[in-house]
Length: 219
Image 1 (cartoon, rainbow, N blue to C red):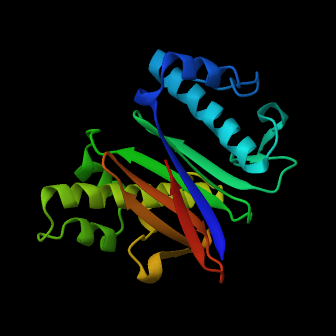
Image 2: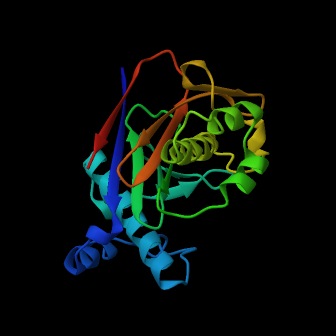
Image 3: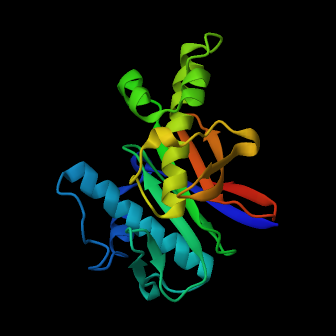
């Protein structure tokens, strides 16, 4: 069985002392491409600091020893370590998945509280099956909102796991399939799982394999 670890952190819960400690972990390379907007900048810095700290703990090495590289389409990886990982963050929270089994991974998080033009976005990005599931009249407004978020985050997670990123039409991906498996001619086969948390919806995607997968959620 392959193990995937899922870690959730909330930006609002960080004390000033903890924030200073985390930011001290950042290297010059970690600061590249950071946003200028103060809130976005802080969140990105904390996300990269958590990434460095959590991966160092998983590998039992010092955080400063980790050397991040990027694949052809920009997906980060560790140049000299056998571990797979992916991160995402919203306005409110950070999430990361990692596995020592080196399974290609992707993750996406969305805040339930964020307002979106759901109908407009769905018309551009949902396939017919996804649209039908989202528009099911038996769903309450809350359930429909969560279904929309599950569909959106699954697409993002699969594309991030593959490494392609959003470089194809999202409405060519159907995330409403038997056994939560997505097949696409440009992406091959991927599996995914969504988690509806108190304040967020998170989806994890990984390369389809014969091994069983266990996802462990860590606070």
